[in-house]
Length: 300
Image (tube, rainbow, N blue to C red; front, side):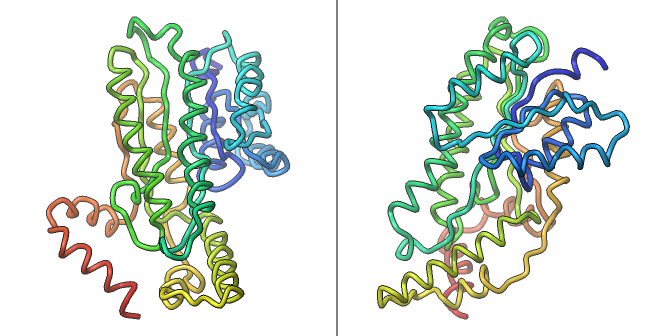
């Protein structure tokens, strides 16, 4: 195996969905992948998957590490553990994938759920990236050679805000802003900042959404409150069967971006309808856009 293919890449939220698919794809491409997630048992399930997919797979190329992005006090120890196992103590890639969706209209969610959404989707991500950056900067200050890669898994909701997932949209808009800032701050290096904006992807995130909505509705009933949006929740979260692109589609794009000497700054991934909506949004007057979307949740 070529030396360049043993470059170390960290994938957060690697135990399921996009993170798992990305970790598998990167290992198959020959990278040394450190898969990070809260549940070590779920990370360990990747080994038999890799065994079944490739005869060339070397189990030393995947290293699972139990990790919680919300616990910043563990960052230093985790990174030391990673660099001690990485070739030349170097980290080539970071895929910031850990995150989740907290559904609910603003009037229905609590401030604690909003803060938790930001703690994991934004503050934890930024804090972990800050710890990784000094390591990536070594050898990249002169801007020579193929520099390191930071891939932030954002969302189409980071480009267009949507009702009933306002807190999630807010975290992804914040991620877009910090990614843009980093691009300019790292302009004189070869470290590339890449954002991935998926639309609806077939992962277990929607099973979680249904459970969260059910819990929120029950809590409101216990407090003698009834949300104005119960019908919308039932239509868009609790009862709907979601269909979207497979997580492997996103994983392929992440691997392509990491391996490319000149990756795009942003990759928009979704159905034809989703991509068209993103492209047309700047040309639709705000009042018309808000009216069209609002009708979807108020006239059910």
